[in-house]
Length: 254
Image (cartoon, rainbow, N blue to C red; front, side):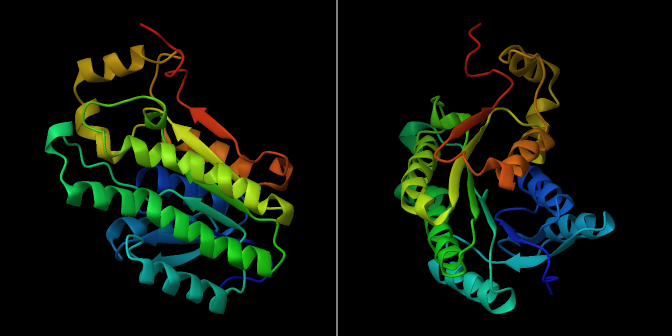
């Protein structure tokens, strides 16, 4: 159960990588963190264990967010158990690499349901509870530099990331009068288990490092630091923003 003095933060897709780092950081900042995954897996349990080992507060919040009924059940549980939500981080996402001519309707639907549709309905449910409880909440979408740049195997993925920015802009307008801020964070290349094999090849790593201004690849904690700030009361005047965390990759031209 959530100690009543702790704000509640839901981080979707927080069993590994960036999501796990976000969950750990928000717990360290004093939130009771709901660690979400599609199923109760070793990664989700490890994230929660790390939170508890560091003296933080949290619990598992298992739900497949591609399923609208699962989203509604999740938020009904949050309402019943905690009566509030203070921070929502829409981090869950997939990127099944496909050449543009190989993308099927099933690929398109799966990617959009997980990355964009789920984020919309999570935001809708969280916002309802924030408005009802008069909570000056924080809603943050983990978009991507891919919202601004194309990719040869991401023609179905990039629109979802651009859509997240547009969605947060719209919700910023809708929810601003309630004191709720809505922002997007756009990571560039971040070292996670997903790209570990690719980055283990020295030339691949060097190529990506050269694409940044700073000369190195980011870590999940680099994203977590920004999200932690956007979740704080001091960030109350930042809304409708799309902030790159990319080591200067977007502005760097080789």
